[in-house]
Length: 331
Image (cartoon, rainbow, N blue to C red; front, side):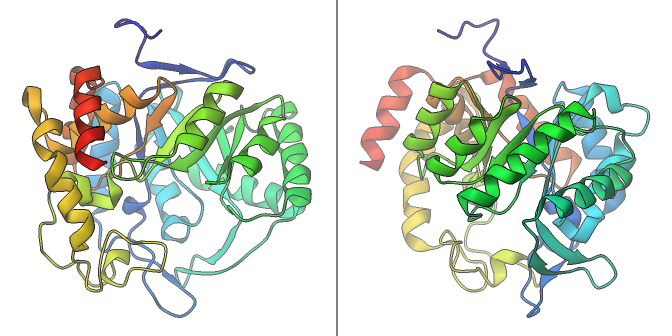
């Protein structure tokens, strides 16, 4: 049972790799980038100086886990994170991902490579962009990788650990079978998967509990829907929510919140904002109450967003009766 004094710490039972209960996702700070067909994959324009200031403010507030990927902004997110952590690298837990191919010059994603040789090539490139000599959590970014190839990549990651290039590894996937395959590796410390108050992930959370993994939670705020900030406003051009791909069901064309999901947010707003929490802080509290192994990684682009998300730690997990009320409202 998690106590008040230890609930903020997450540890992988096998490797001893540890992290705080809250991380920051660095997808948005990568700025604009696109698929080969020109469809947006970023979150629109971004101010690099503000991004750097937000990361450093997060460190000051005790948030040390930063999750990025080599493809975010076609390398730009890693460069910005590396710049922000210059001189403070030992304070941070850095997670990044590999597998997608991209062109830094045109800022486009143009394919994928699942080979062990490319995993090493991508790792070396990430280390260079991040300005560091090791990555704390290296994650396969291709959720549909066949199991036989994933086993080869897991073994390659073990080699990277033995060489001191990474401390631990994980797979970003929503498939329990795939996550379980990676978890067979000694230094597989986590699985990254989607989960939030609107869309639970019981099978993935159960796997994390059984295998002693850290659940790195992507989309903890449903890509902004659970911040309450968007209302019925349209997303700006260059924002992935303005032309949502098939998997992004929370938004309609133009980046307007889908009516069904917006109604569910309204149904739980009062419970989530009790005790002086903002909507986003309540959504993070739900995840911490849902499992003691979760590390939600909300995105950010400003110092103010970093401060609001970090302040959720002071509120902690929702109470059991609040969890029951949310479950009833969404049933």
